[in-house]
Amino acid sequence: MNTQALIFVDSSINNDNPLTFNGQFIPDIIAQKIQSLPAIESIHYCIPESYAGKLKQYDLVFTYSNTDTTEMWHRIFTLTGALHIIKVPADAAFFQSSILSEMLDTHIKYLSEFTFSYNLPSGYACEIISKSVLENPLANPTSPNSLCDIVKNNLNQFDVELYYKEPDLRWHRVNFRAANSRDRLVMQNIIAINNQTPPYELLQDIIDNHPEVLFTTPSYVEIELCGHCTIDCIFCYRTTLSPQHGNMELSTLQTLLEKMRIFNTPYSVCFGGSGEPLQHPQFYKALELCINEELIHTIVVETNGIQMDAGYASALASFATSKVTTIVNINGHNAESYKKLHNADYFSTVHDNILKLKEILDINSKLNNNLYIQILKINETESFLDSFYDFWEQHKIPIILQKQNTYIGRIPDRRYSDLTPLQRKPCWHLRQDLYILSDGTIAFCKQDIGGEAKRGNITTDDLEVIWNQQREDFVNDYKKKFPQKPDCSICDEWYTYNL
Image 1 (cartoon, rainbow, N blue to C red):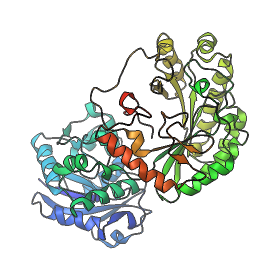
Image 2 (cartoon, rainbow, N blue to C red):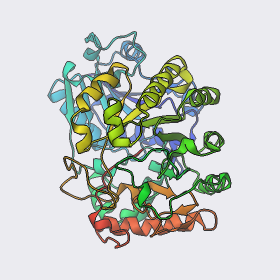
Image 3 (cartoon, rainbow, N blue to C red):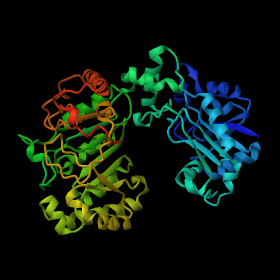
Image 4 (tube, helix red, strand yellow):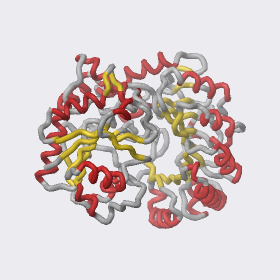
């Protein structure tokens, strides 16, 4: 059958720290487990050019530039003489050889060109590639894209087998890859339960009995930079606040960034809240502070687009970073529909600002073209959604169709369909989010928009203590023990997901 294994180091890994877990070198552990399988003839390693760890000294090592392109796979199949190659992540600390064996049996039984799992978390599953997949015209050897991604994006054009195994853990949104700092913490939490790595079949029981293993560090921080706005949208909660919120002091933002460093894990920031962030008098200084913060990997600016003029585009170009993603809220496809929803006549301004920013992003590769437009899925937008999509898709600007948040009944429900899953799952926001109001108040969650159930204040309180208290709220939510303030039992935002 000539099946060989390839222990693959991702391009983001350039040393051995991400490949070491609990004092053991993960590729060696994976290799030992694979060697116990008689169907595997040999084990190879594949490392990026930037990698400087000890795998460079191993035998049977291939090097690649940016990703596993078709050209790379042609080279490996030619030099190894393999008919089937099993690609295993080199940082898969919980790797289980029995799963690999089952996937290989499935691959061979159904004469598949490509086999992968869509429900197993990364780190347990592998990918199996047959040499025959390279004969497909879609597997273009001149493409700079990953061959595995090409196949997954064109499932109907290849002979693909999907491997499924219970339990289905997808709704936990967790992987088991040591190179990811948050995944690593989850794995360490799981091992601490019984002082051993559990088989995959027991993971759901462990999580159900110890949901705290999923709780690690904040990964998404929403910052209410500004509480002011020049428009009065019919779906906005700002006018329900008393008093309305003001501008965040830069010193408050700096304190937040400093205190987040205690977690020492990457996170994303969103400039959101009740107002328009670009109306903050020191918006660009606030943006610069976040850009310069090494732990922040993504900055989302949610804006009405009115002040997103040439100055905004110029600032993004001067920062020359792909960290910033701009999301423009525009609920209208012409001046008339826009005015009805936003109570203001800024359609042309916003429309032009979006297209001008798109032009600048297109010619500046360093900015990564991170621009989206967002529209609410509500009664008032249903009639023109088709034309809205037709127009913006012509300009190749991705559209976010947003679910309306009523903030637990604080504002009228304008949704024309309810997509809430029938079975309630634990709240993703309690597990990963921090919501900071403009005065530094740490709200209970995004639903606590007035801070009535606040956890403390970022300027005066210990953030680590507050975050540890939030763990208890997450565990209680997992066990369906809901607080009354805010009333989590009637909240329908538990299933929504930011970053």
